[in-house]
Length: 578
Ligand code: PEP
Ligand code: MG
Image (cartoon, rainbow, N blue to C red; front, side, top):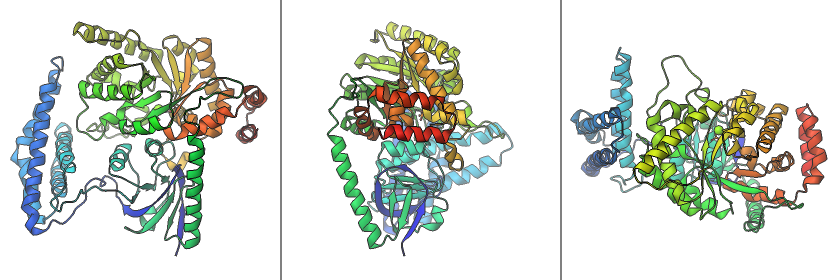
């Protein structure tokens, strides 16, 4: 019998696939039986992964710049020693033989045993050393994942799979994307969570907030995910199937129509040129950016380079990644945002402080983390400055809340440029610096902040989260998320005006910029530069091209005067239908 369940649609598109139910933190590692005659081969695979992890660590050690603080070297040495230690590497080999299971599972079983021992330790410092064990183990796991197992299968093949999970971290979604995931259903999470944003940019149809999904759907059953409407359907009958086939045809037709706009300029009917740029989460999305006619990258979320790995990428690795992106844009500007780690994108191995729960979205996140830990920040600044010789780069700072933070960044940047010059590196003559306006305090003080930067970029995802006090990953309060809330409109207006008064460019790179329902409103408020997930560019361009700024001005005045959210949304709808 057909069963349909409703959640929140967070990433449009229709996925049809088989359900795989995941439990939190168990996504990557599952147990599989290994046939008796293949057990020794599996042990060999495990030993090879350990050897590869050792070699990798030696290489990291050799590539470390001489200026690296001694603690970092000690840290790497400690990990290398663990990889030499039979106490870590022998029990999993034995478990593969005893349990006749895959190496990943055997290693995880051993990890859990060790974690129990560390948990029992009274000394909090010693207990926290499980973090080191975890980092070493995930290094081995990563090497195992690059291999095929003894049964000759790539064990993480998600092609044709709709993952049904309680929740999913952005880092996990990036892994699953590379393994071919067809669709995503989660019990928790809202449309502004980084996982939802990532699903949109990776074009993975997704529904979130589908409560009790793991009880409602069965492993391996065929489901259909309507990621636009947030509906998940199991056992679809013929009527439903033909409805969705027709919808798929309509979506494809609409896309073909939009594709024709790809090479056209984004100009309003009254002749105002609008800049439409793409947000980039993973270098793997560069193909999507190329395919949508983006005029630049208005936000590159560099933090994804730091996830799913035990140690941060080296300066050289970051440099190479940035240069690849800059080269692929062929002279169009690339806005590199310094890492926004913390909150739902924690730095691997960093655990929460103490026993008292803290709110990570308000804690050591983004620029706060960077200013607190120069060993993370300086290699990134060096890599960005070096890469900026390859093409036009704009440096963007996330979560700025005071001008003081910008002074510190500029000072560090000055010292970085001085060091790079002394070392004989090429440095760009000019690299514009911008501040993200995503904390209400920054929007209110946008006039002051604008004095110290070359551009402002409005991050509506966080600006709405912090202004309306709604956690962007909590589906229970996502009904309160409202870009048209009068307070949000005031903050947007203040920021756009502050930029205009200081003669500084203002762009928007939050999700609001990619939602065609808000394009006219933002144009009418004076926004001229929009950056969004690549899939949104052509739809927004279509609205831009159909808009005459003089025609919408009377509506904008009424919208900005209105105080009732319902009245505002009615006026926006009327303006959109002009
Ligand atoms: C934002 O907050 O609007 C933004 C673009 O940054 P992120 O979504 O990465 O927090
Ligand atoms: Mg943000």
